[in-house]
Image (cartoon, rainbow, N blue to C red; front, side, top):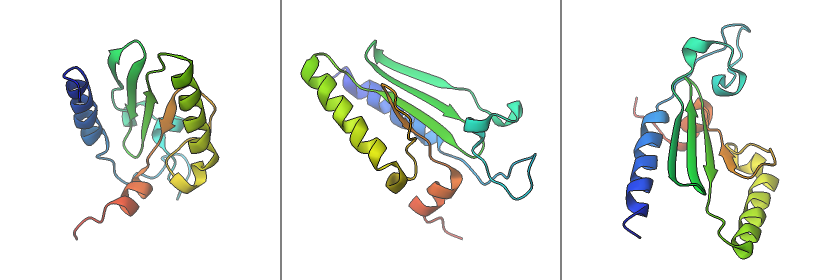
Length: 129
């Protein structure tokens, strides 16, 4: 791993560790509904500060977090035509299987969008009681 890549990935990892501390928080407007606040933005006080981490113009990670969900947008380097084709095929592969991943948004964009909620995080991690 190059010396310029290590600090970037360390920063992304530490920021994601802090942002993924989410909890169950039902919607304040509709009873018994647990909607991702980062998506619906119904209450301004439930949204946390967004963080943009850039290595350069072509490699970015944008993290938007709220009390019960996080949106992670990742842009990977596409220096030449081959890397653009690989990135397009990879995002297409992920979008076609978005239901299986349960955290991937099915939205055609140039970057990869992940949106884990507290329900998904509880399935990934078993917390001691």
